[in-house]
Image 1 (cartoon, rainbow, N blue to C red):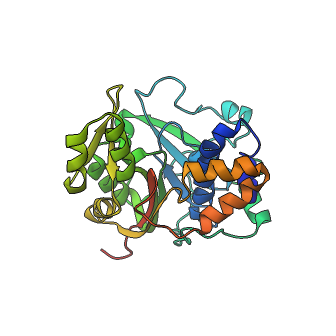
Image 2 (cartoon, rainbow, N blue to C red):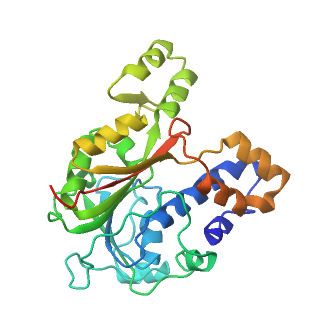
Length: 300
């Protein structure tokens, strides 16, 4: 984890401390969630996520599914030469005989896995042998082309279930492609974030209705919409799709103001602050984003 944090340390002005802290925590949380041995993972994260690359560097076989109509630059290269140019292993073909068969074991939600040396070996500077990354473009980034129970895990980082408003359909597809015991890691916008956006837009009547709404859709000034969740709404989303929720926590417990204050005083404590965040008591009522881990039951 220390190696992950150091990749974001001491780059940019103090005003950028929280975005870099947020990114370092996100990578550390993903690193903790990843299975300890090679697995077949499907990544449906948003276009800004580095989850697929990190998972491949950690030695996993990763199939990244993107929307065919995404703007240019959102997708990853599909050729082996392009992967090698980026320092990545060449892609795999889904269904290859070297795909893993055993589902991953649920990791601890917010405790570091292994020593600093072990975590360093799973960061992008140390690609693990056997990792592969391939990209498939589909309409709406759907999973219909994948067979039932073919994946050990699904990564839905970078607000994927907030950007896809019909998230119930997405979760049902995730549950279908997961093997029994397989897990999904997801990140969504929180109700707190949605309420802050409404307040900033002076939409006071809508703000009052948010706590009682079953589905909270928040408009952005540019016309896009994000779906925001409280912990219970997120839990219901997964259980309704046939998954069992292992844990839900905020992306960061420490506020932007706290992070900026502490790191402005001592930038060298960046890694320590990331470690403290990972150990912090997780109150799911705070933070602009929530992350969750859910598992497909071993028995129906």
